[in-house]
Length: 103
Image 1 (tube, rainbow, N blue to C red):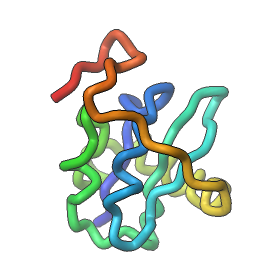
Image 2 (spheres, rainbow, N blue to C red; image 1 turned 60 degrees about the vertical axis):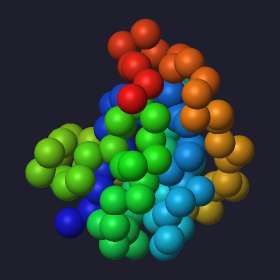
Image 3 (cartoon, one colour; image 1 turned 30 degrees about the vertical axis):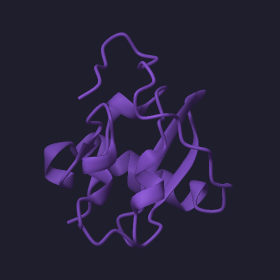
């Protein structure tokens, strides 16, 4: 099962996850007017590197943990796949969303 980027990333996007993904399964884009990252479930090998790298804990280890965002990831992966990579934010940069906290 593929990992899933959840609502915590929507409007937050650190982008560090994409820098450690061994299969380059993580793509940046804009969803509902906000920066976001998605994991392509057809490319993800469930290694967990991305989840360990996310400073706000926005990545869960299976589609079953957040089916709504799993569908969003799968649907947007096709669209986002050709987007250019983004420069990651610093791990210690304060979150943009007041509900997110650095882990």
